[in-house]
Length: 291
Image (cartoon, rainbow, N blue to C red; front, top):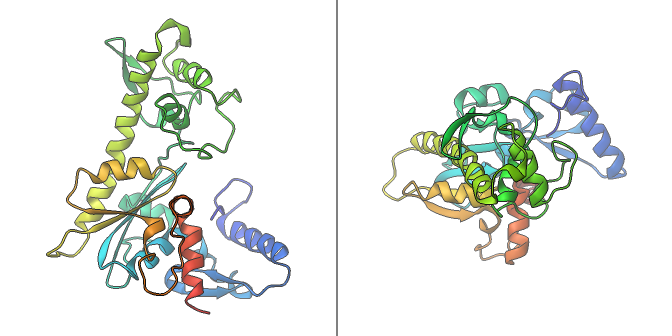
C-alpha cells in the first residue's frame, strides 16, 4: 500500500520502490508479497504482477474474516478511506479490484476520520440558524471535527494539521471556523460543536450508503450477516451498523475464539491495535497459515 503517492510517476514504479525498500530493511529474509487473488508473489516476480499487488492489502481482511465467519462485510474506516468488503464461502468476494473500479462500485469510499478535507464532505452547513457556504480551501480536516467532538482516537491523526498549527481543541476550532469565513471567538464552542456534528453526519451517511450496498451484494441467508469493523474510525463504523440487522464484531477479535492459540491478540488493548492496522495484521495472520 502506498504506491499511489505522488513520489512515484506511476503505480508500477511505486510497487517496485516499496518492495525494494522492504527488502533492504528485511536483511536477506525471504519475502513473499500478498497479491490477493494472485496469491503470494516472490519479490523477483513482483514487477510482472504489480497490478495484483498494488493496494491489495484491503483484500486480506476479507480473506481472514471468511476463514472464521460464514458471511458478512468488513467495514474498515481509517484515517483516509473506508473499505466495504463482502466475504462468504471461505474468501473475500469483492465485486471490483483496483482503486478505480472500487471507487465506481463504491466498495472504496475516500473518506476518513483524520485526513479528509472538510470541503470534500459538505458544501453548506447551518451556522447560527442560517445556511452558510463552506469554503473550497484546505483549511481544516476531519481530524478537527472529531477532536472538537472529543471522539478522535489517540494516534489517529499522524499528519500535520491543515495550517501546521497545534492539534488542540482551540486549534481545531480555529481551523473549522475558517471553513465558513470566521474566527473561532466569533461564536461559542457549542456552535462549533454543532457545525462539527453536521460534517460528522454527512460522513456517517456516506459510510452507511457503502455498507448498505455491500450488504445487498451478500447471498440470502437465514441468519443475520456479520459486519467486522476495523480501523481508527471503528467507532463510527460500529455506529452505522446500528442501522442494519447485522451482528457486529471487532476485527481484532475475529479468529480469537479458535481452540488453537489465537493468531490475533486477545487482550482488549492489543485487539484494538489489531483493528486499527487490520490489513497488516490480516496479511501476517494469513501468512502464518503457510508455515
